[in-house]
Every structure is written in structure tokens, then in C-alpha cells.
Image (cartoon, rainbow, N blue to C red; front, top):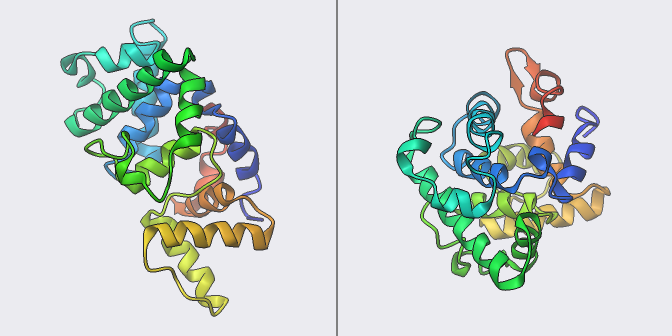
Length: 222
């Protein structure tokens, strides 16, 4: 954590649902692109930004309803993976339903879903049942919706496993148990779970420098 002090400010914005300058459409698209496992900063972020320029800034897609109704052909110009767009549009559709039912705006609907979504029952959640939404995408969406939690992805697990080995502690056997373990680690260390999660990603090296160093100027924009 001492190597990546900026992560705390970034996570504060995440917990306030202010990533991508508070644009929920871009957060949903981000999660959908991230779900297929490509390099986040080199592949996902540039494409989300291109989507922002071509669709959001032009007013073509400015709400969750717009994203849910968007045509596949026009979206393919940004990102060719069909499963990603199915996920993005399906998530947007569910959140738009919450908007209508509760009389909320995009951001309020996203926060409402995140607060009521259960980790233990994630596979039964309407968003958890969407094709392409695994536990990592489910947790990533919850994080951007303001929940202090972690994604049990391979990088997070690898870094935490190294820490646990040095501390003579055992690694959790399931993804849900791992999330619970991270919650306990957060309590013991005084950091938030989400901060520990982002730390594991940003201490990784690219081109001879940490991602925190390499992408420090980009983080405030995403």
C-alpha cells in the first residue's frame, strides 16, 4: 500500500460511484469489456474512452435505456466481442428497470442495486444470471456501485497468496471465502477491502515500472 498511495483517492471515488466522472453507462461498458480478461489499461480503457467519445459525448447513448436499446452493428465498431455487448445491454436493461420502478436516475439505480445485491446469492441475482457475468464482474459492478469489497480474480489472489505465505496463513479455497478473508484482512490492517484489491492490480509492473507509476495521470479520468 505504501507503494501505491494514490489508490486511496481512486477508491474513494469508486465508493462514491464517481468512476468515469460518474457516468454509469461507461461503468457498465467498462465492466463488460473487462469481463473477457484483456489487459485493462492497454485494451479496455482506450475502448471505453472511444465509446465515450463516439456515443456518450455525441448524445447517442446517454442513459441506461439508450445502452439497452443500442444496435449491435453500431456497437461493434468499438468492441467486437458479442458477449461483452450482451452483458452490457442486459445489465443496463435491468438497472433501467430499477430506475422505472423506484423513480431513480442512472446513478441512484446503480447504487440501489449494489446495496441490495448479495455476494452469497450472486448467482441468483438478476445481474448474476446474465451470460458473461461471473463472480468477478458481479463484484466489480458492486464496487463501482459503492460497495467496499473485492474481486477474487487471479491477480488479486496471486498477490494476496504471496502475502499470506509470508504471514504463515492459509489461502481460502473458494471465491466467496476469499472475499470474506479480504474483509478480515482489511479490518486487521486498517485499509478498506477495495483499496487492497486495487493495490494488487496497481503494484504490477508494465514496461519496467509499476502500473501506478505508468498510469497515475490516467486514473483520475477513469
